[in-house]
Image 1: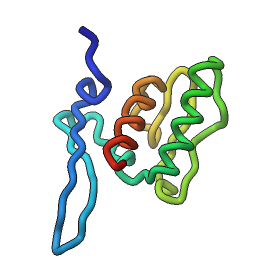
Image 2 (image 1 turned 60 degrees about the vertical axis):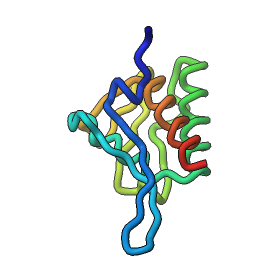
Image 3 (image 1 turned 90 degrees about the vertical axis):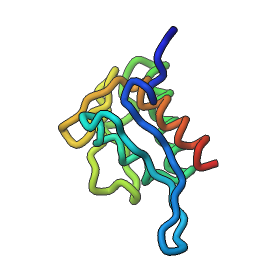
Image 4 (image 1 turned 90 degrees about the horizontal axis):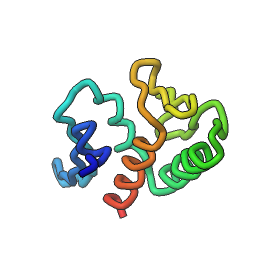
Length: 110
C-alpha cells in the first residue's frame, strides 16, 4: 500500500482556538519537514494557484515559472525545480508530494 504524502512527511492538520480566535494549522511528527508549515498560511485562492502551477509542471514535465509567489508566503522561497520544489533553500521534495499536501490543505480549510 502506498503511503500518502501526509504520512510520508508526518503532517497533521488541525483546527484550534486561542482567546476566541479560531485558526487552522499543522503539526509535524518529523521536524525535518517543518519547512512545509508554510502550507498553513495558504488561503483557498493561494492553494488554487499553487495547485495549478504544480499540476502544469507535473503534466508538462517542466517548470511553469521560477517560483510560487503570494503575499501570504512572501518571506518564503518556494522554487520550482522540476521534478522537485525547493523550500527556503533547505528542503527539497517532489512536486507530486507537495501537490498532494496542498490539495489536502485546501480540502481541510474548505
